[in-house]
Image (cartoon, rainbow, N blue to C red):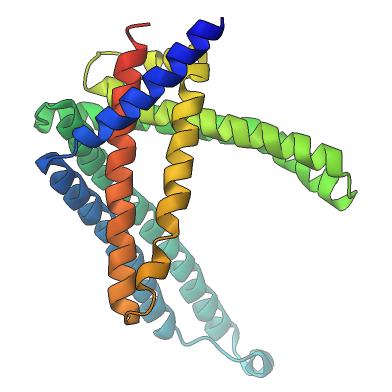
Length: 269
């Protein structure tokens, strides 16, 4: 047992070192794909906010003190404009989320294919969109399933029950980590198998104990790089922000490469 534990720690360390050896030109592409994706997310939400703002400014909504002086037709017109605004917001939010969903499928898929040393094409991206759509439904089901835990946590906080808060927070945190891990595994196995969701759940649950140490290492590395801010915080705001974003994107690239290395090794066990 002690020997197995030592081998596990040694193997995790070797894979950690190996992940840095995998740093080559593909990291540039990974960072670029991430940068494009997050830019799309940012532009999409900024555009949505501006469109909603412009739409709201065009509404001639009456002041509260004017309501008693309005004719019925004017009240109906004002109500209709507000209803149209809400419909505009709903449609805008749905379209924005759809754009982000498709962008995530395209660029996240390209990232994992790049890590796997394979090429993504139109057929694989369409397949990934279908797979992600199915996983999205599973995600919604997962969120609904843990709602009672959040309600219980809220009750425990109001009751100031420290033990209950700690236990419930730990359970929610572990479930969330397992779910995020399964999502990452889905991307990895999408590049190698025809049923990525099934295999992601099987490995993500059955062999989760083999991923604990790697995730601890990932967390420690994140804490370390987060302290790098003190090295350049004297720079102007825009420059320091750009440096922070680039560091985080490089970290995400390493995170994926390390996780891919770990998962490929776990498959042999």
